[in-house]
Length: 167
Image 1 (cartoon, rainbow, N blue to C red):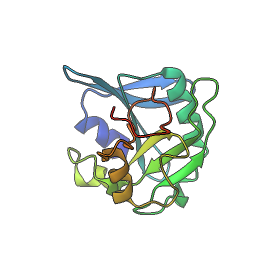
Image 2 (tube, rainbow, N blue to C red; image 1 turned 90 degrees about the horizontal axis):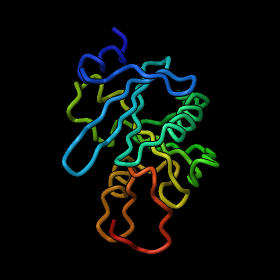
Image 3 (cartoon, rainbow, N blue to C red; image 1 turned 90 degrees about the vertical axis):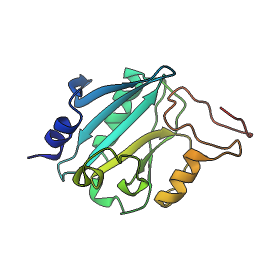
Image 4 (cartoon, rainbow, N blue to C red; image 1 turned 60 degrees about the vertical axis):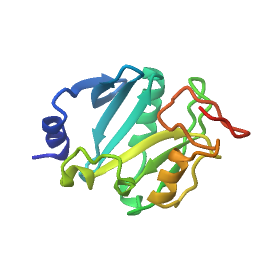
């Protein structure tokens, strides 16, 4: 069974959706505080990718993110390391890059071991937020910081931080 089909079995509420010329699985995680819209797609080599937007989903930004992902050579992704891809999101957003975090970030504990080992997180970002080649633990630190420099990676409507702020 293909990894995307396996994902669909585990995330039973994911619906196949077209975004521009791309076919993805889409589902929402809803709580009293937020709605996180999730997109999942696969590559030919069996890797899975997920992008998430918390109360900030934009189909235009999603389409640009997917457009950029289709030109990334996933065989160049290094185990345990974040890959940074130059990506213009103009005029939809001021994001400058796309960060692709490896499965080792450990954010998908609810999935089977096979799917966890394939799932990469894709984040639209500013150059100041993530560094190419940073480790999975450095990525986790960056999105969980408590000193005002935290990157709210799932907020697609965020602005680049130039000073500490607690969002």
